[in-house]
Length: 315
Image (cartoon, rainbow, N blue to C red; front, side, top):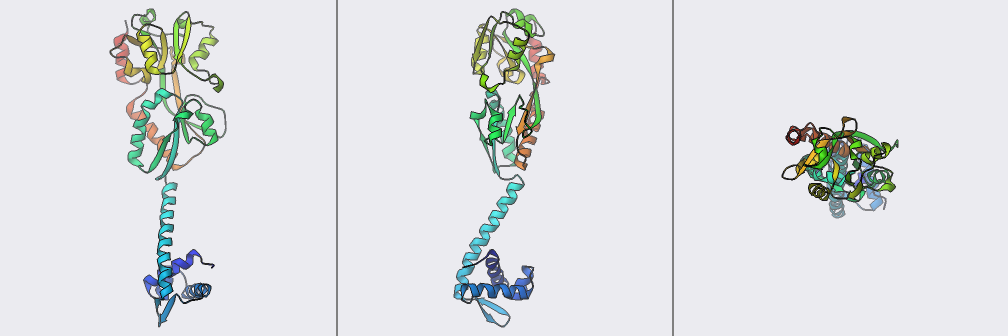
């Protein structure tokens, strides 16, 4: 049978309005057009859908059966249309996100909580497997948004700055370099250096290691450790020095034999970006939450509490 959606709407409307005149007005059709569609349907079914009593129409037995199907189909269509509207308006959908730094995940729940308070029906998936190669995942379509430090030159990727941090040298409190107000790259000469693990195949050599190579600085030893806690404890035990962002090290400065000294301003500041390959309301709403979160929580070195900690540590 060749039955179209407008046939279901026709039967549903006529049954509610009772006459062709009222049903035609509701459907914004002429009475003649509506009468033609009804005859078309009854011809296709080869049975009466409505019994005529003057101007009034009453459902036949098969008409009632057709109406039950009409109500279900129309309700489903309306639900689908509502879902599409919500998706287009950014009220529903899903968002796959990742970071370029494992340590950054400790503040991500705060952003997600703020976001979900406004858009509770958005499903957020944290793709931790993409942490080391977020831009590759983004290009493959496995990621909607990556929070990254480095940029890949590609016209398909859009980058938007969301916050800045500053690199600090982390030392034992009694280390000779702890007496300095500012640390330079050349100060790493002959030091036991502990840096984060990275994947050389990603062709993204971390800034500090690039500067060490460029300035021909040779640390005494270079250990790579994956976890921040382990690095801090090694520094605390006097087994070396490390480099970390201000917001990463801040929670560790109290109750340990560890101090932070800023790197020279020419190399200390880093910008973090939100990288995307597509644009939709969900992504834009999440970006707005990111910016607001960092504006409110003062994650950068301008944080007064962090500045106070540094001042108290200066010998």
